[in-house]
Length: 96
Image 1 (tube, rainbow, N blue to C red):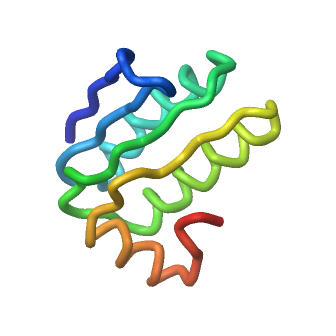
Image 2: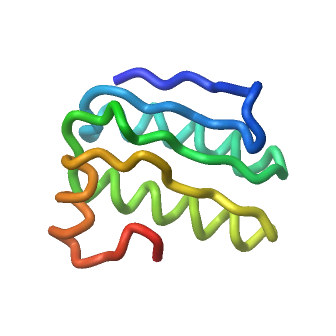
């Protein structure tokens, strides 16, 4: 798993690549907490995610809710097929 900020974008984009298992979600959680506390709108590019589970879905939904509670927007962009499948397994809409 890797993630990289593309701050030249408006809003800034955090690009995630690779597998998103338990260990990777723990590492990404810390990065998402920092991003949410930054007070800006931002986006997650999920095009490079090759494997995702229900924990990843939960992490994304939690980050989205935290951003919204602060009046900010977290958008999910370029959602890969594995991420779509993970959302379907837990019966949650990606845009929810």
